[in-house]
Structure formats: structure tokens, C-alpha cells
Amino acid sequence: MKLLVLPMAMLAAWPAWGAAAEKSSVTITVEGETRIVRSNGLPDHRPGRFPNAHNPNEIQPVPHEFRMPAKPVANEEATPSRHASFGVALNGVPYDPGTAEFWHGDPNWNYEAGTGFLDLGLDAHNAHVQPDGSYHYHAMPKGHIDALGGDTNQMRQVGWAADGFPIYTAAGHTDPKDPKSPLKKLRSSYALKTEPRDGGPGGKPDGTFTADFAYVAGKGDLDECNGRFEITPEFPEGTFAYHITEEFPFIPRLWRGTPDPSFEKQGPPGGPGGPGGPRGPRPGFGPGPGPGPGPGGPGGPDDRGPGRRRPPRGGERPE
Image (cartoon, rainbow, N blue to C red; front, top):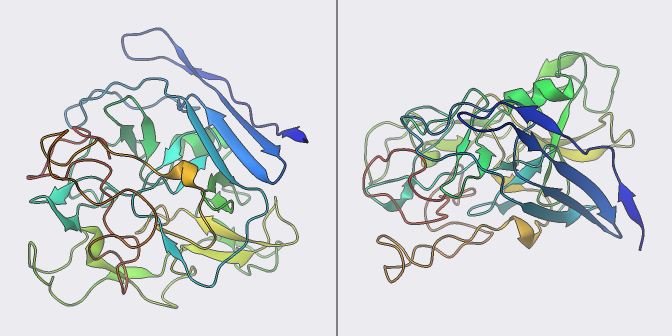
């Protein structure tokens, strides 16, 4: 078995709030046909203050092991991430675009973390903490980008998706086939829906809910997976690559390839009320039980735990 240890081990200390300094630790190896990311879940930058008024959880080291194909293959049809982490940053922190916050507990109406209509206690790096102490990103990982050297002068890879394709910031070349063409800020092709919401909270879509958005082909630079085929510094022969954008969907919600099961997230054994309560949707890949961005519900609601019966304080339950 060939073991390739990539130069991605990071040991960064940051002052914890009221505790001894912690260190971020991550290794990325290729074993056979599989890339493996192992980490303690701590970021390579100083996180925000946790607990805070809208997230009552304290950040803790949490071991992660994610696996993905080292040679991914693009599929004709995209796979919604639904209840899984979309990918993992190069510092070993998961990318979790969805939330477990719902309008009156209805999984058809999933609150959106990145638009700011519901305060989930995100820090300046668009991250917050699970009840088990897991730190995770909901949008652009600003501190991680800075730790890697920024993206002003070059494309910057910031992670790997569950299907094995690379994840970059919004900086990309004007011509995806020409790495010498100027950099620009790539934009997604999602937009707010124009028709009033069908059921649920009613009213005009304003970005409060994931289902307020729809994919509009050609509107931006990226496809429904928030990615495109392009030449990148790490892949001079070209690859499909995802981008984290500054507008919805922020972190992509659909995979172009086949995701590895190690990115699935299992919620508590029960719905509202904990064990013995009614069960929510089964964790896994594929279409969710309700509408998500775009036709047919791609990227539908993410229920990694009990649904909410009210607008919650962020982080009260696992996502």
C-alpha cells in the first residue's frame, strides 16, 4: 500500500477563551485510490467567542476522519448533499452549509445560515459550534483563507468535497481554460424566487429560507453545483472544481461526483423530544423531504437532529 503524506499538516495555536491554548492538527494522505483527511476539528486561525449569545456551545477538539476518491469522476446528474457535510477544509474543519433550524418544525422550510435572517451565532469566519464542540463552516472560511496566504493573486484551494473534487474560494480565472487570464470574483447562478412562497410562512422570498432560492442557468459563472471545469494551480491539466461564493449557496449544496459515506451525519435517535420521539428524515444523500434551491428540491433541508418548533438560539441541537 502506497502512503503519500501531503505537506498539509497544520499545527496552529490560538488563545482559547478561559482555557489553555489549543492546537489545530490535520493530516491529508493518499492511500491507494482514497484521499483521507484526519483532524482534531480545530481551526488554523483564532475562532470567535464561544459560547456566545446565540450559540451556547464551547469549541472542543473532536476527531474527524473523512475519506474521498483520489481520482473522482463527474456524473451527468448532480447529487444533493442534504444531511451530509459537503466537504472538509484543508485545516480539517467540516463544511456544513445546511442548518437544523426549521419554521415551526416543518422540514420544507429550512432557515438559511448564510443570509443572516436568523442569528445562529456565527463568528467572523462564518462558523459556529455543535453541542459536541465541533467547529464547522457555513460560508466563506475567512481566517482559513488568510492562514493559507489569501486569494488576491492566485486561486486558492480551501478544501476537498465529499466526492473528491477540490474546493476553492470565489477567486477564479476569467477564462477557465486559461490560467494566465485575469482573476475575478466568480458568482453563483442562484437567485431569489419571484413568486410568493407556496405554503409554510407565506410571503415573498427574501433569503430567510433555503427554499427561497432557485438555480438560473447562465445567470452567473458557475453551474448548479457551484462549480465548473477549469485549470487550477493544483490541476494544470484541468478538473471539475467547486467554489465557495459570497452569495447563495455560499458552500455548494450539490455534488458533481459520487460522495463518500464518511461525510454523512447521524442525528440523535429520535425527533423532537430526543430518544423515543418521532423520527425526522433519515440522514443520507439525495433529495430531501421538501423544497430546496432550484427545481425538484436539490439541496433540500438539512435535518441532522430534531426539527425546531420556533426560531431557535443557534446551536441548541446538532445540525
